[in-house]
Image 1 (tube, rainbow, N blue to C red):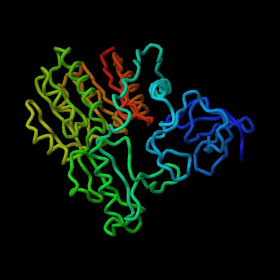
Image 2: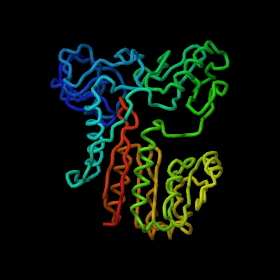
Image 3: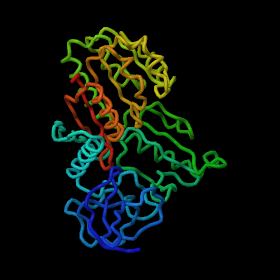
Image 4: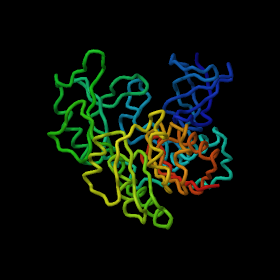
Length: 383
């Protein structure tokens, strides 16, 4: 089915949304921006929702005023095009606006009155290109690139302009190893993964080897560290701090600089905890714990019940385990939540609000320009 229409807004995942007046169904469309008008065609892509479906843009008859020509040659509407930077089609000011809209929508959806929240503008990235300090590419031994969300196949690339210089060089070296029989996909898999970051050497490039996690934008990570440092410095009543999802200590080192009395840092990745222990930070007791264990808060209650401050930086899944949380954390006065997913943050924030906590400060940060991703740095206080 073909139809004409105009993109009215973006979905939570950053896709354009257009309504087909013929059947009153709204369609998600890759590679479009609010204000784009054109001809669309329905595509056969599963979606368990009768009010929504997927379509593709056939012809752009009137581009959005915020549209721009992508700098990257791999951004296109072809089925197997790279989809790593889908928002490169729009000017940066409108990207920041849409990131803020995504956060606001997520908060509204769970029940917040967003008019009563002071949601500041998104802190922009100082670099729009050359900012990424790590990436994960896929290879079948013949091709190397990123997986296209449209085709679920490898979209081959020879360069990536959002990577910093060190990572771009590593990418070129990896490509020079093709074809590579050692990188061929195993039975039952379509590809192997290769992780690259600016802390590794060329001779460390290998398949299916997970590198230690680190925030992908060095400059913005330093800005987030500075935000937390300031928040903690302005709080003279930190007491004992519990940090959840501490990783290898990205924010732990900032907490250790504060006037807190002690820090218990929890993380499920044993290698990350070993890396944190190697830093030998004052006042820090790193511990390996499965923070998604259904009974985790009951198990930790003895050690966390006297904690006055909580700092958490969870993965996309968010805090997830709510049952028994506040019956274990009984002495909390401060919560600093660093989120990489507006939807799971909104869910957790609503849970906090239902247990006597109020949002006192929200700062959004753009870690990854040209993508729907937005980071949220949020302070909670007792209502």
